[in-house]
Amino acid sequence: MGVSDPESSKLAGRSFVASAIRNLLPKEASESYPDLVVHHTAQPVTEYHNPTFFPGLYLTLFPFGLGGFEIKTRPSALSFKHQAKYLLSISDRSFRYHNSFIFVLLNIVQRRQAHLQTYFTVGKSSFDSVARKLTRVTPSLLEHLAVELEQERKLSNPSPEERDALQLLQQVNTLSAPIPGSQASKIHVRNEIRNYYGYFGLPHIFFTFNPSPVHSPIFQVMFGDKTVDLSDRFPVMPNGRERALRLAKDPVAAADFYEFSFRALFRFLLGWDFDSHRSVAAGGIFGFIRAFYGTSE
Image (cartoon, rainbow, N blue to C red; front, side, top):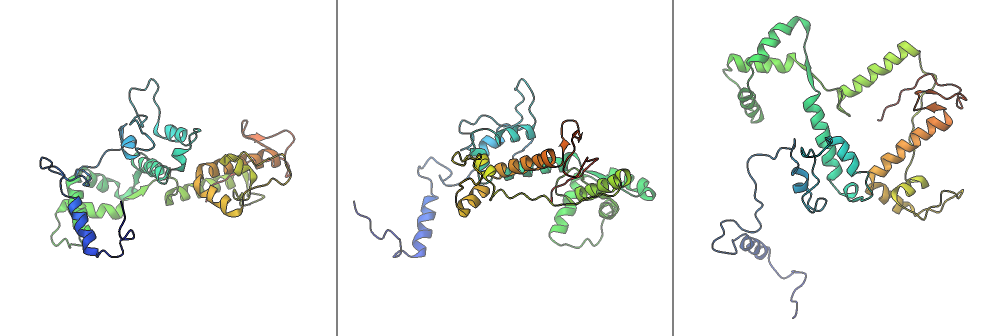
């Protein structure tokens, strides 16, 4: 058997297109769909209480189609967040090494928090009128307005219900403080810090804690490198490129390293006991800590 033109440099582009079209044709006369067509429906698959969602989405991570989320037949209920944390912490690191699994998990967690922990606030003077308008808003009305606005159509003669729905966009504020990374969560953090000022007084020290996992031998051990000897004063580590690749490959180990470094700093240098939520009897390098507040950027 010989191979002619292995780089396909002598074939015209139209030949490739024609070959692709032929591949779309059914192989058997009885088939109504070609082999390369991905079957789908107009209805999205629900992510709530659907144990087959993740096994169907990630076949390589769930090869037997088992082990999905929120299985009602489990003897003990297991929340979505707890199972996600478990899958990212087991010895089999296929889940944390996957290119998209961890991002889909975070996206679902954030959207669930947005669905379940978002509420409206209105001014006291307009509360009664807004309450009446909210009772007249229907899903079909909102869908109609969304289509009109998406296609940039002008509402020449809006109905009273449509006018009320548009006014609600200006009169109602949405609060979503429990959602990490949202603007409302940042405002919530600032308010808590100001409350600390009022109760404990102004802080005596402010610092940014930014440990570097790339240059840390502890992170290399957390990544799984058994050749790094932490008992040495200057452990031998891989080159800089390999350490950067490890950090990009395993963000879960990077998060564990940050948590470990943060707790070690406050426990052994600043003298804070996380179990009793107070300073240890001997204190730390700055004496006794009365309170502290920390948040991620």
